[in-house]
Image (cartoon, rainbow, N blue to C red):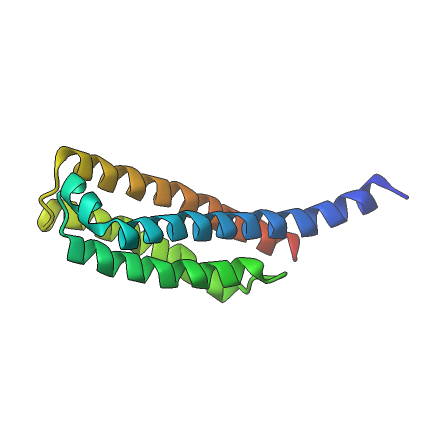
Length: 141
């Protein structure tokens, strides 16, 4: 058995596994945020300076989104179009977070920090997902 034959499975399996793990992480973190926004919209709204109604709506959206990303992560071979949708949706979330902060939200200091930090975390995760998708595509060539 040559060294080349040993590296071929690593190139084909590892990018897929990495991508699935990143999607699963996205689903879990998004789901936790959704549950917090849904269950604690009043106290969180007061702390963050964001209306509880907005947090309930965002929480419901995030719960559905987390479920969809979780289903995608559970697939042995997440389809490329589905992963691209997740990456693009995450990028839209980052942009919307900064726009909301700049244009219409008037949060407390904690709310402003939270908005920026969660947007940066989503941006970082999205970059990793994009890189893993590209690595998977290269390994399939």
